[in-house]
Length: 232
Image (tube, rainbow, N blue to C red; front, side, top):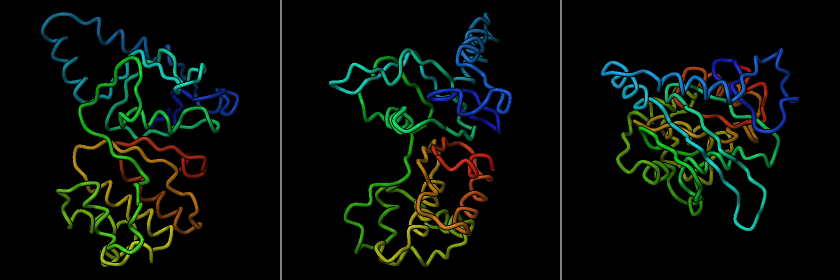
């Protein structure tokens, strides 16, 4: 997990990103920080813990394997994620990146606990049945109480006219679809975003626009094999 250009942990082998390049910080060091924050005593310490937990996703002793498999994808993982962070999650294919996001969404049964002060929303959306429907219906699916002006604001930041919401979804290019979904996600309130490969199938201009957009945002985990995007 990388925050502000520093690597806090990695799924898979650390050989992919040399420690001298990224400042590798092992999960056990994160655990020490968590333990230190709990050692405080008295009213002030309790108040500080309460405020900290309100702003953090707290994962405790998380273990998971797919049904019928003996291979553990995660085993006794404990870490805290600040909801104001922007995080890059990297690792080889099949090492559990998307699975981790699905666990946060509550889609799989697991051992341990995941506590969060706000909900989660996932990119990309399920767009089944949307080909001939108005694009705005996507917002209704994700956030039934959406506010149009907020989506329009985000679209303009992504160099799209809000009029695109009234076009059939099937007429949009892949780049337009990705931008619309990102705009809808970031128009939501009190939601931590789980963004899975947002630059897949995008041309260079669209990738640069998505990158510039995400640079201004916070409160999300980004899964990507696009190292240029992550480094930027």
